[in-house]
Length: 162
Length: 416
Image 1 (cartoon, rainbow over the protein chains, first blue to last red):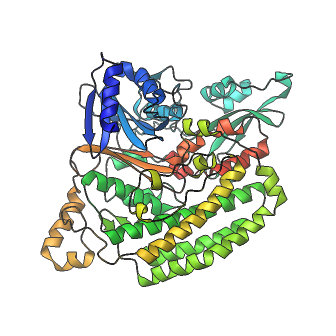
Image 2: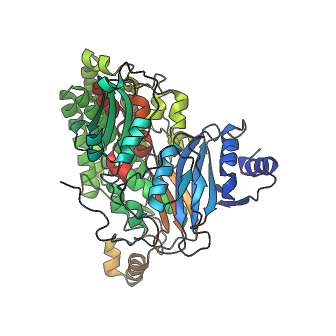
Image 3: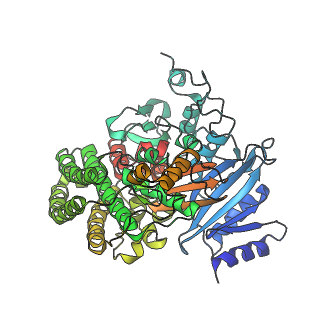
């Protein structure tokens, strides 16, 4: 069966209580759902023998600036068996800026989540080592947020002590 | 320890010391030592900083620190039109800028629904493969140099210079090329460039064999890298390895074959794989890939169709400068594209190519404006460096240098 229909069908069978929003743009299947299910859905997608999304290509976030749920965390997954790309999305609100970490499922997600945390300030629960990826630890801001100015904040990056 | 905390940030130190390891210490206080390697270390390929926790000379903990070359390219992309960003992709993986150009324009074309003409696609394939050869030559040379065989670097760079000369003819720049355009390439490949590429491919194979003989008969090199830094197939997939490093661990995965883009399905090529997953396998794999790429370029040059090199979509594709200066309509389009951008429809795409280091992908979100709402660079080096702690633990300090050289990280790409 075509994976474009098989994946939504399997997910609906496995998680009947979850509301999956499925979209398909330019042949890229995207599935959006509530963030509390992220760990279970990811584990299912990785271990299910028909799907086997063993490769976590990329994790990032989008800042929608003015929307109610300000951030969307995006997971780009890949199935080496089927050569199929899948995108998962989960909304995260600014006031409750947390989502479960999937680094227990894919080890490679570790740094990608750290990068997302550094750039957007989204905290990943149960992450083994949630430090900043690029910016110094003392840095107060999250550069890829839309309210961070392109020119940077003067004085936010102090020179190292001699 | 108090003194350490003054020099290293406490959080980094905590990450280093809390790392679980299987190595028991006889007397932790006597033996343990924290060593800072980089960011200004000749063997870290740029500005990679490693904090190593040592028991004698054996590594029991490793924390890589990134960000010394972070320029915020994702933030800049959000404030730039799609055309303006092309030169910035050169600075990602600065060893093979042509491949980055190709990756960016393919992603934008997918987002905006543009298809480049056949000849442009063939030219792009040619430059992407030449970029792969150029990058692997640096990787092999620098790897051998890291381990102590200095001559090889000069030999591989000599070959690389010839590729840079081809790029010089193609687009007038040897290093930061910015040769591709959305909907095609900047200008048609000149007959001189094609001839030079043909000449290069013909003389490349014997020269590469010379390099290979020089390395393969070097017992010091072989013994220093054989069986060092082994990563199993499962770990390689789990850690997000890609490109030559993944294939050296026994996964036969190549985006050119598995998710074909451009015209790779019209080309006959093999995907070299090794099962050992150690530094030596990664070196052999790069050699094999150089040969395969040379074969691909040969086929491309034979099959190269004639025709235009820019798509005929005046509202999306920049017209040629001659036309802008002489025709009204083109001048208007040029003005609109430069000032307001190409405004792809609302949507999001992810497109990846098999870059020379691995899967180089761009995730783009458009809100219908002239500039992307979000641009995420999926850089292979970033994910490859992530496996360093796993690879180096249990080895000696001198092996760290060999392992870094073998996974071939480029910090411009890893730090963005």
